Structures are given as C-alpha cells and as structure tokens.
Amino acid sequence: MSDKADILVIGMGNVLMQDEGVGVCAAEALENRYDLPPNVEVVDGGTTGTELMAFLRDRPHVIMADAVNTGAQAGTLVRLSGDEVPAFFQTKISSHQLGVSDLLGLLTLQNEAPGDVVIIGMVPYQLENKLGLSEQTLARIDAMVAMLVDELARLGVKATPKANPTRGYWERQAHMGESASCV
Image (tube, rainbow, N blue to C red; front, top):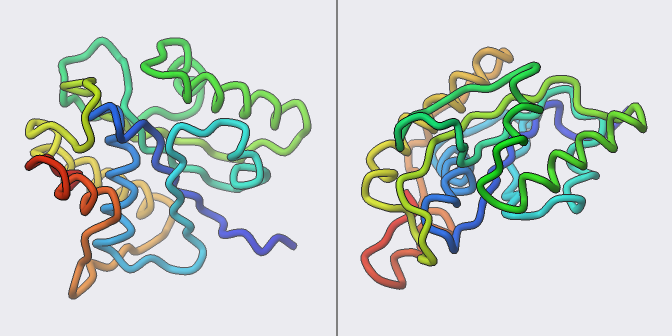
C-alpha cells in the first residue's frame, strides 16, 4: 500500500514568464485558501519534467493546472480529460510540457501511469520575462481556482475555505518586485 495521497494537484509553468506561471499560482492559491483532506497533495511542479515521476507514478487521480494553448481567446478556462490530455501536449507553450508528455508516456509503458489525468488550464494573456501574473490573468485566477475546487468535488473531496487564507510564496515574491502579483 502506498503512503501517497490518492489525488495529486500539480501546478505547472514558468513563473518567470508572467502568465505562463498561472498553473503554479492557481495551485498555490488553492492550497493557501482551502483546507484539504490528507488524501490530496498539492505540488509546485514548475517547469520540471522527469523529476515528477515519483509524484505521478501510480497516482489514482492527477489534476494539472497549467497555461494552455488552445487557440481560444486569452483568459479562456478549459478542462481537458481523457483523449484531450495527449492532444494538449501537441501544442506546447513551453518546454516543460514536452517533459510531462514524455513522462506520462514512460509511466504508461511501465504500467505505472496515473489512473485519471485532468488538466485545468487558462489561455495566457502575456508571456513576457516578468515575475507575477498580468492584471488580466489576476482577474481570472479565482475562476481557475474554483475549477480546481469543482474538480476535487467531482472526486468526492470537499475543499473547505480557510478562515484565514495566506499569501503563497510566489505571490509574496511578485509583490517584492514591481506591483505585479501572483494572486
């Protein structure tokens, strides 16, 4: 029996490329705004690829939060599951997505793939070398976090709002620079 939580919520993206880091910021906001039961683990996946193998291996449920390139209008929120997940990796925004695609393929070959993979994504507004989300993305981040909460509810998990939510690491870092913010 594994000691790993049944559900992994992983925030993906490059926080140094403005809205490309929306997945990391959304996962961080989820963890800082909600009390989650022990069967849910939240991880900052950043731009890693193969380093995530141990986190993903044999996990019954994986929810990835990430910036997505769907061709839709900036700010569009999407839920991708099933056959849509491999198709998502065909249109990459950054190099980390190739690593995750390869990793999922490798885990499948080893019969250790996660059972259910869902991507909650947002089409980015700005992809510049800048820490912190754009104002437009900040205006949509609550909706993305709500989609993560809804996805957890679909899996039977109740995310309870914290009485005193905290600011996450990336939000604090963004505020140390210009007036940029990460949630």
